[in-house]
Amino acid sequence: MNYQQWLKDASALLIEKRKSDPYLNAKFDANLLLQFVTQKSKSQIHAFAETELDEKTLENLTALLNRRAAGEPIAYILGETEFWSLNLEVSPDTLIPRPDTEILVEQALERMPSKDCVAILDLGTGTGAIALSLAQELKKCGQNFRIFGVDLMPNAVELAKRNAVRNHLVEVEFQQSSWFENVNEKFDMIVSNPPYIDPKDTHLNQGDVRFEPLSSLIADDEGYADLYHIIQQAPQYLNAKGWLLLEHGWQQGEKVRSFFTENLWEMVATVRDYGDNERITLARLKR
Image (tube, rainbow, N blue to C red; front, side, top):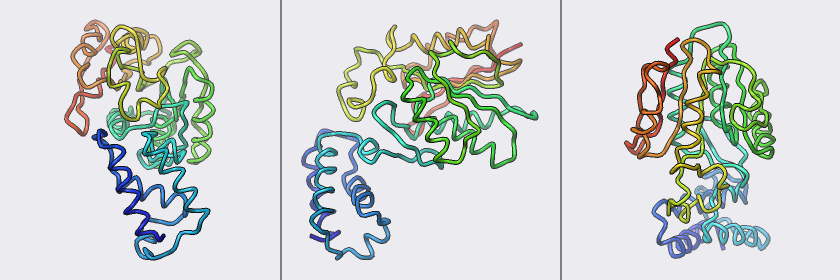
């Protein structure tokens, strides 16, 4: 079997097995698997479509294809994913970074204060995607920074540290902490993509989230508990006129905005994602 034949058969299998998956891109996934196993680029694969696959390569491809056909996220199968302009290691210990989270990075960069050294806290850092993306952009423009990422899960902290090394951003610090528990300083900006799904949400039994850690997905009080906690505690950890930016569910914008009390916060706003859903709510500390 050659590259072209394998791609055709693999795409057909994924379509057949994943009929109910609205997010499946069978041809894209098949290409990623073939690139990963053969260590060839997409252009090389298509330029040499008649290249024959040896038995060992076919065995590896079949094993990975069966995992994807069973619904396992492609990022977990490959052990990596792209976010912003970074290549990140991922594992079942953390959420898979989503494209919509890049909007949080964009909004944070737009509100970055002008000062000698910017201090940023990333709560629930997971893979370190947000913290490292911000560090990369600040580094490009020569801005001095101190970026601190925390996560409840020790395995996630170690993963984020590896991603810092992987992307040559070792200036970013990562530490275990339950939200602000081990944080002892103030920042110019706090960013977070916390758990915000209602434990009763039926979508937890669908798609990629079936394989992701529940501790990173669900929160009490219909998904609002962690969002509320962060908003209530953040003023103690922000410098004057500091910003707080939070990702949340597409139907949660109105209630999240209501958590920002007028006597503490100003410029409260919600930004929509690439699907035109409310996704990021942000505010600036008044004092």
